[in-house]
Image (cartoon, rainbow, N blue to C red):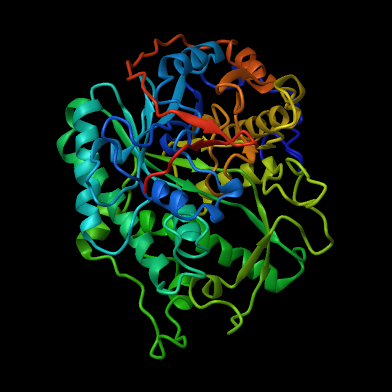
Length: 517
């Protein structure tokens, strides 16, 4: 499509990518989140987040029984990490402000994320309860504090991060905090829809709060980050059922949050399938309905849209059946996979394991990112700036290998290069992309995967005092960014040097000597 062709491996006609291919004001950065890197879980009066509670109470649900009580100690190593960012040459850094550090007795117990210093700084709430509409007021109170305290420096905010990922894994599969959904005896099949409703209202209320009280003099922007996917038919484009399933996947993943932001209502497919009768609801179910005031606040409530993109999927039509758990899993009518009906992967896999050849969930699918960006522009009519707020690939943690043996992360370099080519292709076809953030700045706690996956451009030695070293991808990124980069000052933040005494497991995973619930 357009002036530059791109194949399934992300190869453009010009297979090289240069910093000069992007505008001088294009945002190039790396990203982290508070819970994943900070540690210091009970330092300086911090309250418990729902991930603190989830990992400490359910170590069996995390690979290696790990938690983030210590993780990579970024809370106490802020100055050291800022120096690493300077060496890497990024002009932007996306990181987190922990909600329970700001309001430890809040009672909601999620955390939020921030892009910080003279470039985009973002607030994003990651993990939120759903049981009461009071959560909207609580979230706005939190956002209000952040706007007031940091708005003189923070000019680009994100309210919500990956609402689909949080809702699906937290309230459908139960693999993420707070562990609702499957195998949770008191979960209800309507919970994910209520969660999504409250997340969207939280975002809209925070957006309007900034618009009303801060925008006129702080001159900032507020956006939202969505985890978006691109899907292909499992049995090929000639299979009508799977072609229809692609539309179902579009609605139940991307449209779940894009449609309310554009139209103030749920996608039609969701309205049809999520309201049918089930055993527990013989008269049918109802989706939460946005009031007139909520719709007014929600529609167009972003100045830019953040996109977290890692992979694409093959999707297969899945008919409704009593064998499928009632609720979202049955309602969506599709089954996603990285492998098609012929057994072919959708892209090159990040890594394999002898005991499980399809262990990694990341595949190299850059051409599909280009198509996703076209879809956002043409199907959802999005003309506002788009920022790729996360994009990256993992290595499998191998405690038996040294830094020298794992620093040559060629797959990650290839992954980043080809996704930059994919973004460049879309930009040359008039898609308004204004930034790219690699996930992640450094190796860290990766949710239910614990420390099994290493996503960092910076290697962290989990066995030897959490020392940091650049992987080859960090060196490549530095060289890439050195070409025609705007020089911008970084702000250094003073932090407390104290951190809980910790020990390391045999696998090198940080672990508290005594976990306090």
